[in-house]
Amino acid sequence: MPSCTKKFEDLNTDKTKIEVLKGKQLDKLFTTAEYAGITNTDQWAGGYQLLQSLYTDEQAQFFSCTQKNFPSDRNAMVGRWIDGGWGAFLSGATTLDVILKNTGPTSLAPDPEREAVAKIWKAYIYIPMTDLFGPIPYTEVGSGKDAILYDSQDAIYADFFKILTEATATLNGKTGQVFADGDVIYGGEMSKWLKLGNSLRLRCAIRVSKKIPDVAKVEAEAAAAAPGGMITTNADNAFMKTSPPNYLNPLGVISDWGEFRMSAAMESVLKGYADPRMPKFFEPAVKTGLFKGIRNGLTIEQMADDANSNDYNSNVVSRFRNAEMTTEPFGLMVAAETWFNLAEAKVNNWNVSPLSAKECYENGITASMQQWGVTNFAGYLSSTNKPAPYTSPSVLQPNPPYNIGPMSDIPVAFGTTEAVQREQIATQKWLALYPYSSPEAWAESRRTGFPKLYPRMNNENPDADKNDPRSIKRLVYPPSEQIINAPGYVSGTEKLGGPDKTSTKLWWNL
Image 1 (tube, one colour):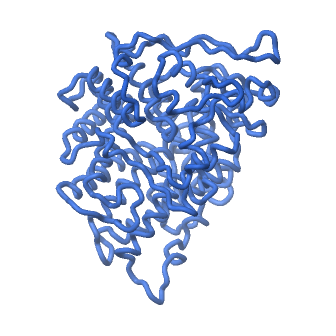
Image 2 (cartoon, rainbow, N blue to C red):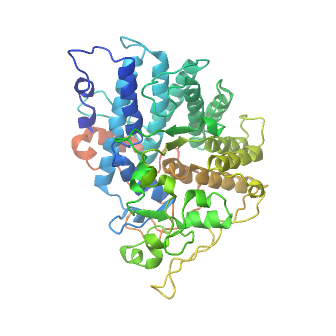
Image 3 (cartoon, rainbow, N blue to C red):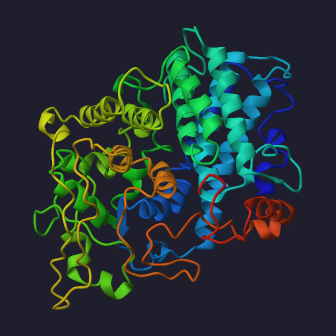
């Protein structure tokens, strides 16, 4: 890791020409910080495949693995993959640190508005990383030190609230653009970054709501009441534009590699609910013309069963395939998530909206349907349909072991008990986060226990349990950290509260 951070500013600054980075120089650097921040570091999807496609996509059960040589869907921790994703992220985090240092109050040319936007992006990119690992490098990233110590997760979340509060206060009432020549998300529109900052503050409050409920309530209510509003309409959704040839839609890059298909969990919910988003999410299987998913955690032998092969199961739709990877924007945060966070906050009896929990829940579904171009869904909101059982058309075995009952028994129509309501909100949020936000979906699954998800078929992790779809509580630290940043690794394990294992719970995960 020090190789990603030490002397970064020296290497990226021409000492003969530049003393202070500003204006368009910062704008172009911000482009790099945005793409690398989501681990999309090159035209081959960078660390996105290594951390998201091969881990969070599978742990959240958006998809199931069909690549015989990949054991991650069987809970295996592959060190070189984690190393690669970790390094890709730090590339973006270190670049962002350069921007913050060149715009902050102690810089030679303070730029409060650019600094505010950079702070919001810092919170955005660090949230999934600390929720993957727990304590991580944070305050010392970009310091150039030989040993980069880790911050505890509670300290990191406390700083999220601090920097988001500061950033949104700075942007309050501001119009116009910053990073206009570099921001590939909002084109530098400060009013939209303000909404993203407030929405992230609510996201963080919901995440820690079981661990520190009093703090979470204060932060959620402050976010909801903050000037500028939140992302509650699809017009304000955060999507990252592509910049060919180097920066493409990473899902579009990898989706034709044949490594995944629809999960059985997705099939159970989408088919059972007769969800009109299913043909927007997935395409019918090539061989059968049917929408079909497969169980997570298949062995190499089970993947050889035709029923579990790519041609017999549903891939993502064409807009998320190679043909569109140079033009299709990459989703970061959408209005539906905000509405579901507000719905849960209302169930918590927090003062975040004059609307009821039911109204916020239905607004979340409505926002998601409209985002996907679905216009006829009025009956869906009151539907009593429930998830469907999963059956496999396997011919390899007379009694295929893949069959299993419905993933849950909750309908779409908002329930009358708190327990049902919480499961419904989490399940619909899971659907609304598809396909880009599996890190968020997995974090919420660990926090809430919902959606219930199916047990894995097999497990190759001695620290995990195939029968518990949430037995993986975190990813282990990259093996390289023990060698090149040993003091940092030790500081991380000390602050983790348990051994560097997948069974060690994160700070907020009770």
